[in-house]
Amino acid sequence: MKKLLFAFFVLFINTAFAQKDKHGNPIFNSISLSEENTNGYLLSCNYYTLRDNIENTNSSVFVSKTPSLSAIEKAATSLPSNFFIIVKNGKITTMLSLKKDKQLKITILDPYTRSLKEVDSGLDGDITETRANELLANRYDTTAKIDNGRLIFNQRSYKIISYTALKQAVLNLVGSQKLDKDVPNGMPFIAQTEIREKILSASKPGGELDVWTPIKGHEYDGVIIEKGVFATKFHVACSQWAYNVVGAGITGENAVYALYAEAVGHPVTEREKSYLLYGYRKALQDL
Image: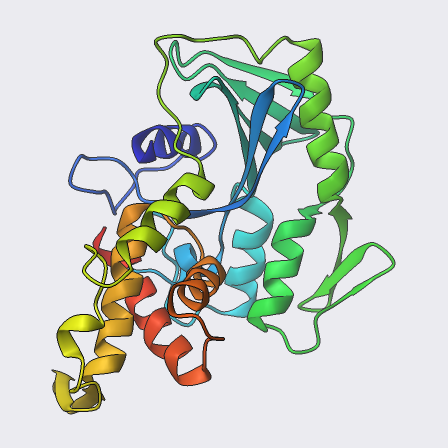
């Protein structure tokens, strides 16, 4: 699945990649936004994150660990943002993504023939709503804001492309282009809900992802995690758990926090968040 997403991303970027995974594929991280059953097929909505890529030294589009506002602005408005996967009977049929050229087009990819088709999206704008929201959440520019459908960032104004309108444009294309065809021998798609269920089961006492039982009674013993940095065994376990669930297929730090809270049965503390985030980012670099 990752190989397919990388290939899809490459179609939108005309460059040579410095960072590749062990299979030679460029590295560009994405998260799952939602999975919705509609009209007899599953619509998987996804997003190529900004921070997990331009600040990640292992990403093919790494800019800097502390990118300038101008560099962030350029990446935010030029790199691919939202993409969608159509799944029929558990198999991937088609992938679609918004492409900004002179016009906003939706590119349709047949993942088996690698054939591309570009269709006018009927949309207007400069930056996707998902990307605009991430810019605000990351607080790169403390004066940034969304006002009357426009993002104000780095003293510039950008018209926002509505996520609802984008998703509807994709749904319309799936219907008009008959993109929900059945592909019996196609690539299997594992839904995030299925991955979550397996992780929660494996996180129970004695499960493969149970990092708590082995340290019971010694949770707050101190250990050195790197030169000059100390932590408790409990917090190291939090990092290890986050690392493992990213490897299992969970995408996005907020998804990791929510799943952890469900696994341990209590809201995530700020201290736990810091160690979960450490494991999450380490996984993005390693996996």
